[in-house]
Image (spheres, rainbow, N blue to C red):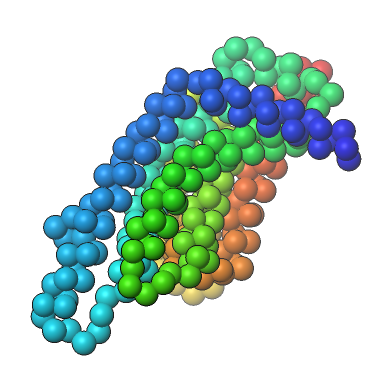
Amino acid sequence: MFAIFSNVVAIYRKELQGYFASPLAYAIAGVFWLLAGFFFAAVLLGPTGIIAQAAFNDQMGNAIPIDVPYQFQQFFLGVMGNLVLFIMPMLSMGLYAEERKRGTLELLATSPITNWAVATGKLLGSITFFITMVLPLLLYEIYAMSAADTPVQLGVPLVGHLGVILLAGSVLSLGMFISSLTDSTLLAAVFTFGLILFLWVIDSIAEGVGGNVGEALGHLSLLKNYSNLVKGMLDSSSIIAFASYIFVGIFLTAQSIEALRFQRS
C-alpha cells in the first residue's frame, strides 16, 4: 500500500511540475483569469449587474430585498461552470496524448507502476493546478461578499467552489480517458468537449424522455448536479455523481493503458 501511495505521489509531483513549467498551461490559466475577471466585474458591477438590480429594486420600493451575495454567487459560479466546460478539455488533452506522441506511453504501460497509480497521480496533478487557478477568484469573492450588510456564512461560497472543483475533476477525469485513446491533443480536446457538452445538456433530454428512463438520465446531468452545489446545498447525491464520474474516468483510463500493455506483451 505504501509503495502504491509513493508511486501516486511521484506521478503527481511529475505532472504538477510539468504544468508549472508549461507555457500552454500558463496561457490557459491566463485566459481563464481574464474571462473570469471580466465576468466577475460584469456580474457584480455591470449596468445590469447584481448591485445595479438591487439599487433599482430599492428605488422602486420593492419590499422584498435582493440577497446580493447569494445572487452574485449563483450567477458568477454559473458562468464559472461554463468556463470549466470550455477550458478543462484543454488541460486534459495532453495528459496521455503527449505521452503517446513522445513515445513514452509504452514505458508507462510496461513499468512496474500500476495503471491506476499513474492515472490517479496525473488526475490529482491536473486538479491541483486547477485549484491554484480558482483560489485567487475565491479570495476576490470572499472580499466582495465581506462588504455586504448582512454577513455571509463562509460555508455557502465554500460549497459552491467545491462544486466547481468537483465539476472540473469530472471533466478532467473523462478527458484523461479520451486523451489515452489518441496521440492527437486536438482530437482529445474536441472529443472531450463533445462528451462534456452532451452530459451538460442531458437534463433537457431527460425532461423530453420522461418516466424512469428520463429520471435516470437526469441523475447523469453535470448541470443539474452542479446547480445543486452552487446554491450552497451540500447535496450528497450530487457529490456521489461527481465522484462516480471521476472514478469512471480513472477506471477507463487504467483499462485503456492495460489494453496497450497487453498489445505490447
